[in-house]
Amino acid sequence: MRVLFLGGAGMIGSAAVVEAVRRGMDITVVTRGEPRRRLAPGVSALRADVRDAAALAGVLGGEEFDAVVNWVGFTPDDVRDHPALFTGSAGQYVFVSTCSVYARPVSQLPITESSPRSQPDFPYARDKIACELLLEEAYRSHGFPLTIVRPFHTYDRTVIPVLAGWTAIDRMRRGKPVVVHGDGTSLWSLTHSSDVARALVPLLGNAHALGESINLVSGDVLSWDQIHLALAVAAGVRRPVFKHAASEELGKQLPGWRDVLEHDFRHSMLFDTTKLRRLVPGFAPQVPFSEGIREALAHFDAHPQLQAVDAALDLVMDRWSGWG
Image (cartoon, rainbow, N blue to C red; front, side):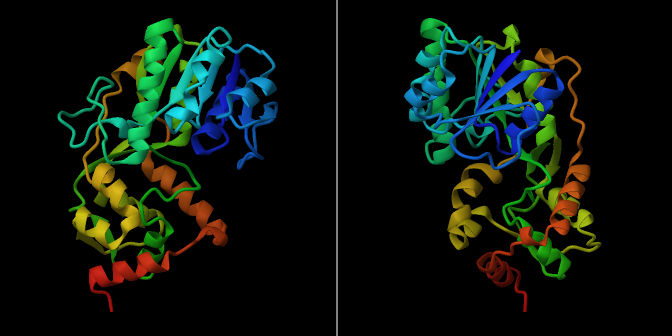
């Protein structure tokens, strides 16, 4: 198979490249500049702004692909010209969206691909919905070979997958309380990037996936307290101290967190993966969170330059927890 990745040098995309190469696919990656992560051996690299249809068409030179995967479509303008560009030259166009498109609060759990999409206030999710609707209209009106995939909260060794990031680890190791939003009992889904790749790559060239949207969520379901406890165990902290704060109040103290707390993290999010498992028979996640986060802590401990503490956040957590 010949597969074109638009973007694909980020966390999930680079894992998908590795998985696709492992399966014998011929991969071309288009990025605007030098990829942030080293591409797998044998991958062809092109330079163009994938949001500029003329520039993209120029570097592709009329080449045809069995599948095109768009990792960098964030607003309707990013994808508006793609139906015209790839209809007839691609057997499948995979748009990487997000499970954040589903309406909050969730009307019924688990969330399926047909659950309502609505997000009037969270710009990232609102724009992803607009992209989906534009591409779906192209599919309905003239057969644009669309597949929509929706990952959720994805991480790898380069990410501490909580809003506080390394600051949470630093506080735990210093014996200081870590503030957890809500009461710590809302449920969340986490998936390692390699598991997302193992779910996505078999969908490429799969005719049964055309016209479908598919949740690429397959990791552990944990409460936020359990997530922080797993971080503590991986960090070698036996007795972490957690303090809880209402998401709305934290958002007032930390404006940069407001949107994601109000419209995403404070809700329990559980997903149905029946469609994924039907389209990718035998799929099962291979990296439990306890293992993935140990890998991440080992990576951060081996690279001290990554251990960035947010001083402003540290101060807010001190005030909120009554530290000192």
